[in-house]
Length: 277
Image 1 (cartoon, one colour):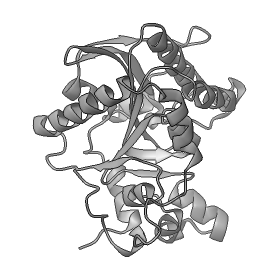
Image 2 (image 1 turned 135 degrees about the vertical axis):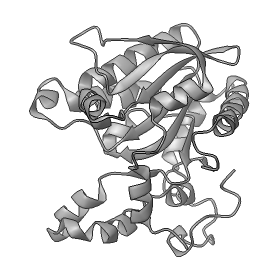
Image 3 (image 1 turned 180 degrees about the vertical axis):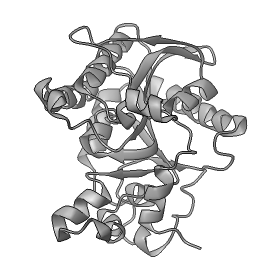
Image 4 (image 1 turned 90 degrees about the vertical axis):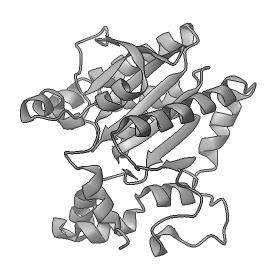
């Protein structure tokens, strides 16, 4: 049976899905976590550091939701504060200095929206990430592994290649928030989800991502090995690209243009043929 857009939202939010740390442990070796934004504090919602992808040194940045109630509270349920985005930016600049590729794993309902976060410059922190990532002269790959909510997700997704797991979602607002704004009725979240075009199939159709990654054997060693091989292949290609920044700029300029105008709208079918590895 075909899944609705809201079905995929529920799957993306599932407690049993691998978190950012699971991907780091499953794909990389010798991960060394680094802390702090050098301005205010550390933010546990973003885990970042250096690691090896096989023999290749890389910078890894992941939004981490946590598992237990205690850990999720510590990590703000995967909603980063400005300190988290500034920490990520610090490590991305470090990666450029040492010529390391950057790999990001995104899973957030959105940036933390508390008063303290706003007082510490949440909007500016996200904007600085967007601006700087567009100009970093090293390859950047981002993978949406669960929820991709608003600017909180985009702040780690200005990349040369963006992928989504097949049940991940990517949207400017949550379906519940959209329903509350449009109809003053959060119970219409399923209707809002369909309107938001937030599935991986929608994102591929509109050119927002490059590919959809299969969730076959999700969380198992074979699953992580498949993603590792994908990353290694794409980094080989990107490292040879003499027009890396120009192509990154062009990638975002063409958003919203279908690869094939005659392609059937993804809302009318569950998958696009050939998009899932």
